[in-house]
Length: 180
Image (tube, rainbow, N blue to C red; front, side, top):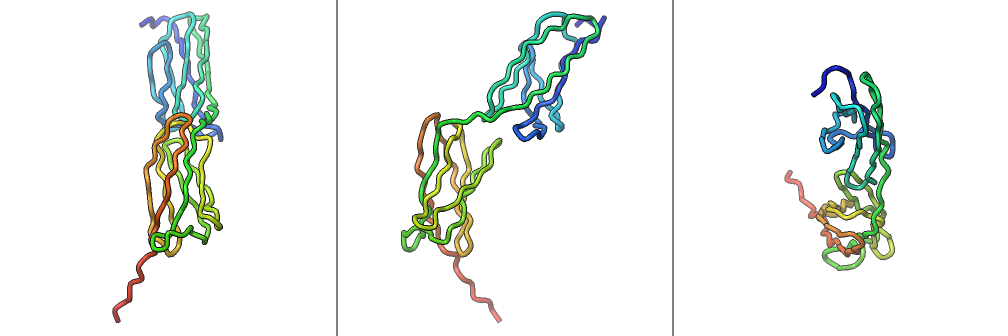
C-alpha cells in the first residue's frame, strides 16, 4: 500500500426515502466493505487512476460509478441513493373462515415482510381477496391478523415473473370461560 498520499473514496448509502442503510456491501475494484449503522463506507489507500464503485442490494437497482483519482491527496465523496427495483412477480389469494370456508367479510389486511420491503394490502370485504404485485423475486413472510381470529403466517417464495396463489384458512379464536 502506498502511504505517500491520502487517496480515498467515501460516502453513504441511502434507501428511496433517504434513510441510511446499514450492512450493505459496497465494492471498489473487487474489494468489499460493509456500510456502518449510519450508511457510511470508506475505501482508503487507493492508487491514482480509475476506480469502479458498485452497490448491489436485493430489491434495489444496482448502481455503479466510475471514479478518477488524479492527485496524491484526494478524497472523493460518493453517496448512493438507491432506487427500488420493481419485479413482475405477484402473490395473491383469499382469506377464508376455517369453519365455513366462506370469505372473511370483515375486511382487514394481509401483511408482508421481507428484509428490505414491508407492505400491507386490504382484504376485499366482499370476496376475501388480497394481492401483492410488482414484487422482485425472493422469499416473503405473509400473515393475517384479524380480531376474533387466530393469526396465520406463511413463508412464500416467488421467482421472477411468477404468480403464486396462497390462501389463508383462519379459525376463530376459542372463547375461554374465566373461572370465578
